[in-house]
Image 1: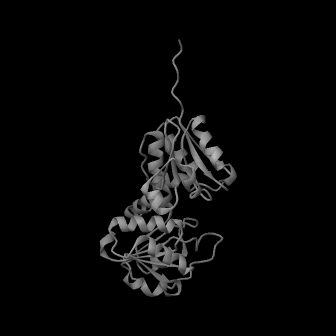
Image 2 (image 1 turned 60 degrees about the horizontal axis):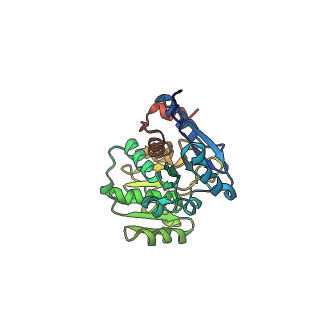
Image 3 (image 1 turned 30 degrees about the horizontal axis):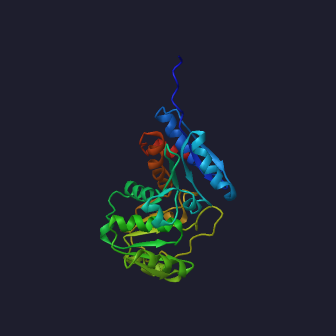
Length: 279
């Protein structure tokens, strides 16, 4: 009798569009580095096909997938189990398929953000002062939750559409205070941390038009944008003497929990990992 070979685990990323995603490069690098017989596949899936695809993938040998725009909220209607983090953020980016076919949804963006910040600014102490967060989208929700969990005493949140900032203020409680967009520069002198969660400054997008005149050298500045890697915000903060952290590390660190759950090995984010996705 011939011995039955072990199944090769399959994972991937689902979105529309998806060709731009760096996740296949990242997970492919780790699979090769750790000698794991598995595959990570980019899949462009329309919203109308999402349910059928997700319920079929476990039958085809998939152990899980990442989900990105525009599916991060829609998977809530399909998942069988939703983590507290994903529910509070209002979006999921990591799905795990259990052996019984159930879909478990989680959000690792906040974990990725905080790990990137700890790595890039190891001396940053969350308890020493407020954070200023620019933007009030899904990424901002993940960032706010991670900062509150880390012990940041207050978050000053600003967004071009002020009503969205006020919504998050109501959702997260009295440690979050909304600030009108035109006053964003006025609160920077009190900031222990400045975070840009908007797409402003990204290639093809308008630049971030927030005055940095009151930014102090002691403030840590991080930008979730990583195309370009060195945004004008980070360049200006560098010139003021601030410690700056680019956004690529968040992409790398948020992928760690999913890879471990799917392939059974916890990967390390290092210089080789960064190089692999900057090809």
